[in-house]
Amino acid sequence: GELFGPGNPQLPLPPMLMFDRITEISKDGGSGGLGKVVAELDIKPDLWFFPCHFQGDPVMPGCLGLDALWQLTGFFLGWLGEPGKGRALGVGEVKLAGMVTPAVKKVTYEVDITRLILRKLKLAVANGIMKADGETVYQVTDMKVGLFQPAAA
Image (spheres, rainbow, N blue to C red):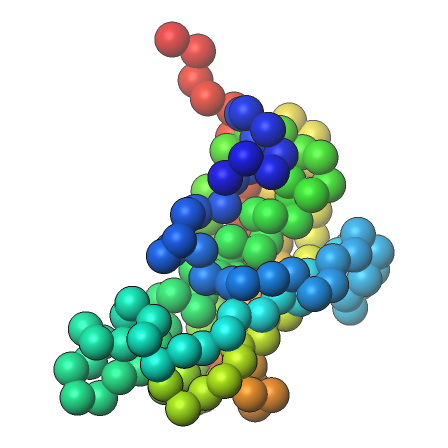
């Protein structure tokens, strides 16, 4: 929560922080050369969501994978040095083609920044994928994350 300093983008604290490490970040990577982030989450059978989603049929909630991709998109804006508090603003399409169970060892997230607005409005638009042990299980298009300055009191 403190990486970029007060008033700047923050990641959620565990257990809502949905990745363990960033393995690649680039401001000129990705399909359009606008940026790329790759991160990983180690899957352990005792992760907090497995006992309650679902009892007897444990699976990582799909919304947590989407949130991880949003988290990484917001992190990218902060990493660029942009100020403000990050907020997810929407998503175009989400396709879930598989799931994450306790048998999975590692989830990999890949975020491809497709549009950046860095004026008064700070906005990143990105596509993302989530892989479970190397197999793509989620595909997301047109994620939007913005940075906002707190309203003056």
